[in-house]
Amino acid sequence: MALKLKLDSTKLYVLAVSGGVDSMVLFDLFVKHNLNFVVVHFNHQKRAESILDHELVESMCTLHHIPYHYIKLKIKNGNFQEVSRNARYKNLEFIAEQYHTPYIVTAHHLDDLAETIMMKLIRGSNLLGYAAMQEVTHIDKFIYLKPLLNYSKEEISLYQQTHQIKFYEDHTNLEDTYSRNRVRHHLIPLLKEENDVLTHLKNFSKQSYLAASYIRKESNNFLSKDLSFHLSSFDALHDAVKMDVISLIFESLKIDKTFKKIETILAQLKSIKPNINITLNKHYHMIKAYDFVYIEHIDKNKTRNDENCLMISHNKVDLPKIWVELCYNKLDFPIQLRKRKPGDRLSFTYGSKKLKDYLIDKKIAISDRNNLNVVVDSSGTILWIPGLYLNETLGSEHKIYLSIKE
Image 1: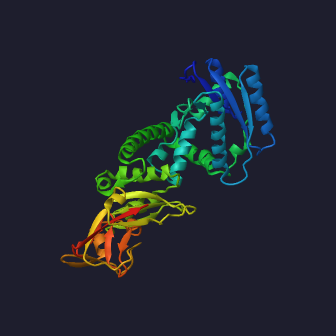
Image 2 (image 1 turned 180 degrees about the horizontal axis):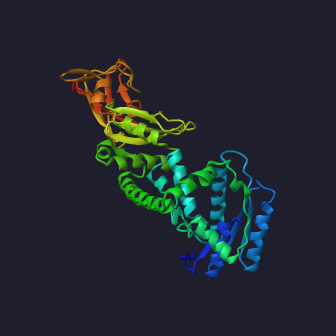
Image 3 (image 1 turned 90 degrees about the vertical axis):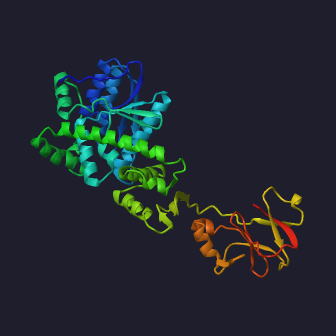
C-alpha cells in the first residue's frame, strides 16, 4: 500500500521531525509531494546520541533547502512526557506564528492512535478523550494535521525499507519505563494476534468522535458564556449532555476533571437542598441557588466594598433615581444601614415573620442573603430591604424618602 498525502501544496506547513522512522518518512513524503514546509526538531537532552538526530535532520533540510529550527528543551519537574509534549506544542505554535501559518504537522500513525485509545481506557477519560487523535484538530487559531493517521507502523516501516530512508532509533522507545511503551510493546501486539484490532480501534475512534462532537454541540448551545444555567432546563437534558456540560465547565475553567468528580457534582445538583456550595478547586465554586446554578470566582486578593451609603430626605428631588417612600407616625431615629442578623423579624399588617423564613419563601440564595442591605431604626425595627421589603405598618402621618448610594 503506497503512502499518500492529501495536503494543499499552496499552504505552508510547520513539520515536527524527530529523526525517527515515522517523521523521516513523513519528511520524505513532503519532499516528494513538493509541499511548502519548515522543519522543527526538538532535543530533549535525555540521550548523549540525540545530537545524531539533530545532525541527520539538519543535513536533510540542507540537502532539500528546507528552513530548519533546532530547539533544546530542558524538562526538570513533573510528568516528563506530558510536560515535554506541552513544551513542544508551545514552540511549534510560536514558530507557526512567525511564519504566519496555522498548520502544524506531526507524524502520528495508526498504531499511535491505538496506543492512545488503550491508554485512555486504562486511565479513564470522557467520550472525546476515548476518540483520541484526529487527522485534523483545531486548537485556538492553529490546525494540527496528522496525515499518516490512517497508516500502520508496519506500512510506514515498509515504505522506509523500500525507499532506504535514513533514520535513528531512540533507544528509550524500546524501554518499558513509560506506561505508553508497555502498552506499545506488550498490549498492542497481543491484541493484534486476535483480529484486525487497528481497524476496529480506528472505527471506535471515529464513532466516539462523532458522538462526542454532537454532544459537545448540544452542551455549547445549552451553557451560557458565564457558565451559568437553570436547573429546570438542565434536568430536561439527556444524561450524556448533562455529563458533558459539567465537563465543559471544568475545561473552560482549566480544572482537572475525572468521571468521579462529574458524577459527584451531578448527584449534588439533584439534592433537594435549595442552596448548595460545591467546591471545584481553590479558585472556583459552583453555587446552586434554587433553580439557578452559577460559578463563583474566589479571589482572595480582592476585598469587598460594603461601605454603601444610606441617604434620607424629606424631599425626593434630592435623591437618586431609585428610592422608596416610607410612611410613619413615629420612628426611633437615627436610622441605620446594616446586614441581616439572627433573630431579625419583618412586620406585616397580618403579623410578623422571621426574616430568614421570608427569604426562604422568596427563594433568595444564601450568598445573596448575606449581602442584603437592611435599613433599621435605633430600636431594630426593619424599615426597608431594597428590592424585597418595605415596612407598611408604621402609620401615615409623616413621609421620608430613602435611597442607598453604592
